[in-house]
Amino acid sequence: MGWCLKVPLAEGEDCRSSLREKGLLDMSRAIQREEDHLLVPVAGPVRMDGAELVERELPALERKETDYRRLVELPEGLERLLPSSYDVIGDVAILKLERDLVPFASDVAEALMAASPRLRSVALDRGVRGETRVRDLEVVKGDEDLSSVHTEYGVSMEVDPSLAYFNPRLARERRRVASLVREGELIADLFAGVGPFPLVICRHSHPQKVYAMDINRDAVEMMERNIARNRMEGRIVALHGDARSLLPRLPALDRAIMNLPQSAEEFLDIALEKVRRGGTIHLYRIMERDELTAFQDRVLDEAASLGHDVAVESVHELKSYSPRMSVYCFDIIR
Ligand SMILES: C[S@@+](CC[C@H](N)C(=O)[O-])C[C@H]1O[C@@H](n2cnc3c(N)ncnc32)[C@H](O)[C@@H]1O
Image (cartoon, rainbow, N blue to C red; front, side, top):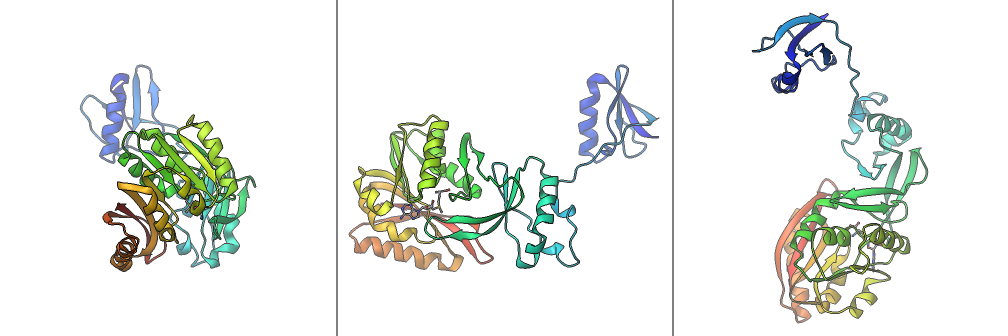
């Protein structure tokens, strides 16, 4: 037996939310109907206008744990190494573990899947590799096939993170860039991967065309399917190859997106040649905060040495990369 408030059916929702706000709702028992009233379980002998305080046997509610860290059993001292966050791409979780936790990866993965039943696979991230930035992934639980459908700001994308780079944590940045695009712009994404920037831009703005290139053939094939999936044929042109040889063949641009955060500035010369006066270059770079000013000075000097007058309009910190480093976006106006 426990305490409940008996309220007319029509007042049940107001009563429940008011109790919840005050921390008086007993969430361990279920609300039940009794003829034309509802029995709302409360944590003690609570009084409320229009409600009768009664004692009833109500069914217990099963509470599901959503924090995977509470579901995993590890040798003493290792719990504190469990990551508080991880990436989810579609129904695939990608997890980075400290070295001491790696032998327990499948226990951690099992806990993750128990806490998030929509997950189909959990893969261990052993870092990105080479020019294509593809992750070295080891499936530790679930389906070996890591291809899934990821949605972001109204766009649905096929992504296989074992074949192409994709970062779900840049979703807000892609939406920010899309919000800057004016009607009729010609845009190039030099390092487009499976196409998230072009797709989000075309979903939320009206550029004339987005040229989207990548050196990774698998990424370009996924991008082509993503263009079709989102019915954006003709608005996004997927190109396979090296931006250094593809970009010079394009018409003059209003905007260039350079999301290659280890070395994008190496392509600044070709972007400056292609973006028209007044156009914007979004240049992404990983660095420490105290390197920002020197980097900006280098960009301005390099542009000047190539005969271009540019200004860094704004700098945005997007996400941390390591304890000291973050990914920044420099919005450069030509
Ligand atoms: C950091 S990823 C960015 C992917 C995408 N913009 C996103 O947000 O998911 C960088 C991409 O650049 C591609 N890449 C690297 N060097 C390239 C080059 N020289 N020309 C074209 N693409 C290149 C890689 O294959 C990779 O897909």
